[in-house]
Length: 196
Image (tube, rainbow, N blue to C red):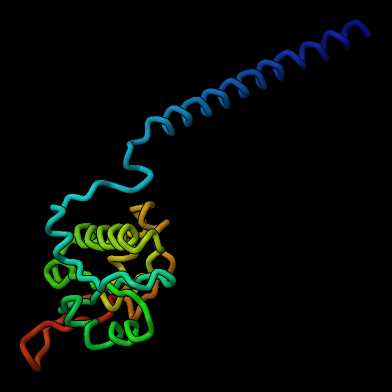
């Protein structure tokens, strides 16, 4: 009897030490996470800082006067080989204007062909921020076509502050899985074909 009691006590001691160490490790992990959380950079809540000069970003955005405060303003993001006005001013934009929506178009650098996706996304970030501010804090609807949706998706993914200001995102034939440029035998130019 006496031997069995001491054996049980002896078995409990290693378990007690095990759980004490486990608890200390857990507390250390919580403390480390708390330190990292509070040490996060100031831009973490809104996203990384923009590298493109502000005047350049602002000149790429063309907006109507914000007169319809009851509806979300619409940002159009163009596809490859076009500018914002070339793609949208003769198609969907006039129809939405006629239906009472405020609209803006953004023109991405280099007609988005050969431009850096991260840099192009800064144009969308700036556009959404300005539209939100000038549109009386109305959330923005973003519509992208062709090569425009991946740019808008990048902005929504990496700039959390922008994501919070977007009501809807519409991708029209977005090349979300990439494209390859293939030489065309007909015109001597390159054609875009789905990657895969």
